[in-house]
Length: 124
Ligand code: FES
Image (cartoon, rainbow, N blue to C red; front, side):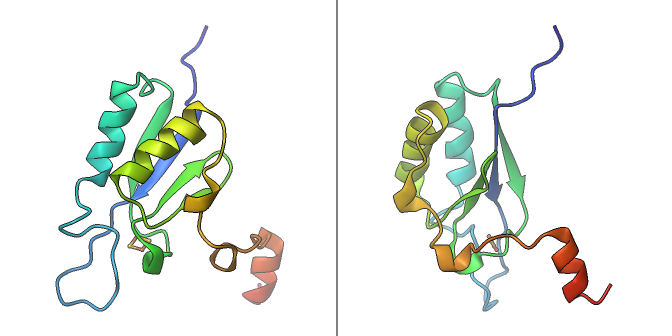
C-alpha cells in the first residue's frame, strides 16, 4: 500500500497588505491566528493525516476576506472567523455537508471559463 493522498486540501489565504495600503487583506491584527486555528483544530480532531491545510497568497476575493478554498469541490468560504472555520471542519470535512451560508455569493463565483475560452478572450 502506498502513501495515501489527502482527502481534502484547504487553501487559506495568508496575504497581508502593508499598513496604509488601500487593498483589503485576509490577515490583519484580528484575523492573524486563523491559519493556526485551522491547523490546530484539524490536529485535535485527528484529521491532519488526510486534510492538508495550505497557506496561500491572494485568491483574488480580497473584498470578502478572510477567505479559504476547500478542494475538491471549489468551495470558497468567505468572511471567516474561528467559529466558522470550526463549523466548516465539523460539517463539511467530517460530515460531508457544505456549509452553504458561509460560501461566497454566486455573483463573486460564477462558472469557470474553460481554458479554451480564456485563451480565446486573450486573443491566443
Ligand atoms: S488578500 Fe486574501 S483573497 Fe486577496
